[in-house]
Amino acid sequence: MTTRRLDVGIEGVNEVYEGPGGVLWEMLMGEQIHVGGESETRVLAKHAGITASSVVLDVCSALGGPARQLAGTIGCSVTGLDATSKMHDEAVRRTKLAALEGKVSHRLGNALDMPFRAASFDVVWGQDAWCYITDKARLIRECARVLRPGGVVAFTDWVETGPMSDEQWTALNAFMVFPYLETLDGYVSLAESAGLTVVAREDLSPDFARHVQMYLDALTDRHRAAIVAGYGQPMYDEVERGLTMWRDASAAGQVGRGRIIARKPA
Ligand SMILES: C[S@@+](CC[C@H](N)C(=O)[O-])C[C@H]1O[C@@H](n2cnc3c(N)ncnc32)[C@H](O)[C@@H]1O
View 1 (cartoon, helix red, strand yellow):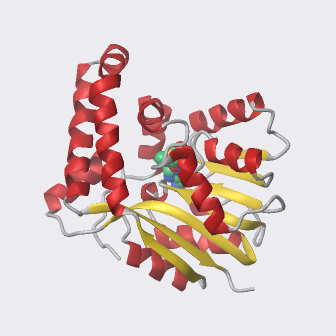
View 2 (cartoon, helix red, strand yellow):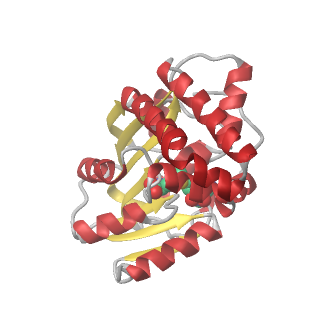
């Protein structure tokens, strides 16, 4: 488990995603704002054992792309929880447009204080977003609380994978507005402390490094002009600087991504 913390919280997250952040990340990564897009959602759904009868909670659901894919392709019910009004409102609009309101609903709320009763869901799901959460132990306890006995927590997240100086650690997290990154071992301990049994853990870091390079290439080759025109040169320069830093750290094995599947005892 890591101990360094940056003093950023939910207000910082809201500022990013109410502002240009959500648009920029969608530009670079697609409507599903996680590494691997739809194919990763298919893989995680398989690991989570989602079926048409599953009741799923997507924690930090952003624009609701994964929720609509799961409901549209598997037929399960999905609730998306997100703390940023702009992302929530846009998710509601897109779900209505896709005529999936019968299967997909969206709630505005904080993952650290979930507005759901205990044992409400068969699967609690997360993709590349829990890195924003200030108290990951409390987050995992909340996931365990809202999960029914025998249910599954399935998530991917960006993780710390190697040593770095305080200066580099601060620069990487500050650019993304992350309070800190957990480690894969740290997530396993948090899951176990919350009474969950970890059934699978995977280090996906080489694929992460490849994707960060792809996002940087997309930024410099395809999106430079649009970002400069829409948000100005200083904003473009800041994004290129930050992504270059993440590309270098992921190539050096200092940051990466992992997948964890854990079960609540029946
Ligand atoms: C990278 S996006 C998530 C992408 C989404 N999982 C997907 O795959 O499309 C991060 C999202 O997490 C949300 N978020 C961050 N901290 C949160 C919190 N404490 N509670 C709820 N949502 C939060 C942000 O508002 C933002 O929409």
